[in-house]
Length: 171
Image: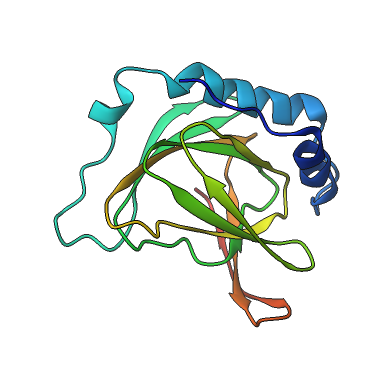
């Protein structure tokens, strides 16, 4: 798979959008390498969680866990959305293996990004976003978090701001 790397601007924005201290460029680079090294694996589509025909929720598979990262494979049914959330103190990188996702993110204003099989998105800790499958079919995506995904905060989008509504620990 020929992936286009995140731009320097995206790396700088990911480093700036962290509530737990800035992630190092080395951590973000590591997560991008994990995605690059695994995106071409022939077995990923076979390993991808199978969705029930009437599924409305995503299905997850933890592929790898080290001291530096967790690697997740996610299958998305048509219309699925994460809802507005962040990943606590974890930084992240993700790409799409099949299909297309839309990432809405909040950094003082609403921004949209298309995530396809030739792109990688990166984010620092505290990055608030809502990732959606707006297509008519399932999507398979690959996500790396560093050091580990140990919390998620959930938010409500209020048009001109977001509001924290719950916190979840221990993934």
